[in-house]
Amino acid sequence: MSSPFHTKAILILLLAVILGVSNAQLSVTFYDTTCPNAYSIVCTVIQQAAQTDVRIGAKLIRLHFHDCFVDGCDGSILLDNADGIVSEKDARPNNQSADGFPVVDDIKTALENECPGVVSCADILAFASEVSVTLAGGPTWEIQLGRRDSRTANQIGANNLPGPSETLESLTAKFNAVGLDTTDLVALSGGHTFGRAQCRTFSNRLNTSNPDPTLDATFLQTLRQGCAEGGDTRRFNLDPTTPDDFDNNYFTNLQNNRGLLQSDQELFSTTGAATSAIVNRFASSQDDFFSSFAQSMIKMGNISPLTGSNGEIRTDCRRVN
Image 1 (spheres, one colour):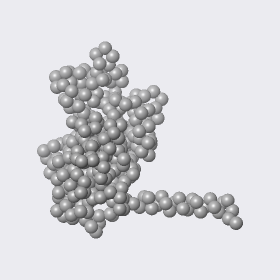
Image 2 (cartoon, helix red, strand yellow):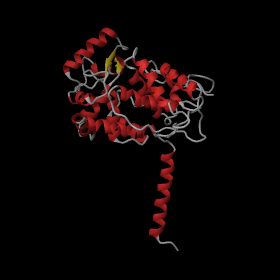
Image 3 (tube, rainbow, N blue to C red):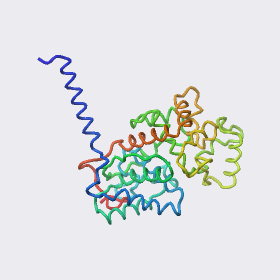
Image 4 (cartoon, rainbow, N blue to C red):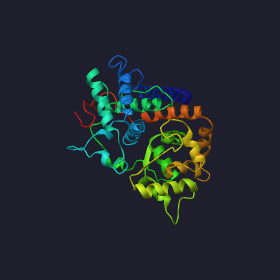
């Protein structure tokens, strides 16, 4: 008869094997033989797009984020409305906000010309996120690949994406629900070091009779004036200091009460929150932020991917085969 210790050892070994198989589903070498030029193709298309749209990098990484948080990283956000498909593009967090889809189409076309039927749309978003961050001066990381594309969308799930006006408690719960911890929350929020946000996403903070007390007074007046002149769709830089560079200024902005979105400032200004110390750490060390951001992007990219025989490799990212 096996001893309890022997049985426990076997269980631990089996768990390690299972986890190893799970982690092995995605691989940094997945396309090395089937589409070895995939990364350079993605890079070329994004570099060309950036010549006319300085915000394209922020748009593409946001698509990856919004994809992974809804039923995992499966390219579902890219699907248009069709029979049996209610598009996530029309969900509240994405409608008139999510962008960059034509560039994803261009990447897909280029990849199909090079290696037809090989690179998934879900992996295109993973490629594009790393390329976008790197081109803006941010960190590089080894991209885990091998995702397949979903044949369905989930608009209801997309309506529950982390939002710009949520409390830290709510944000933490949504990140925890997909296996991401507090450090991941702060690091991934640092993606707001580039990009823009419309006035409608933070106008609740500008109330004349009861403005958000965590908003710097001078910054408050600038936002009020700009939104009054430009309306709800007027865009402001998420990072007013270096808006198109990927750096750690996002965190020094929070320290100065100049986080544009409530969900940003909550990370630093929520009394007693563990996130405040992480903000301070990233503000004092860009290298620390870059390292954590890269690790968190890899973790996020591993949220419930479709692999093996699940899903498909779409030939057109906007529709199922």
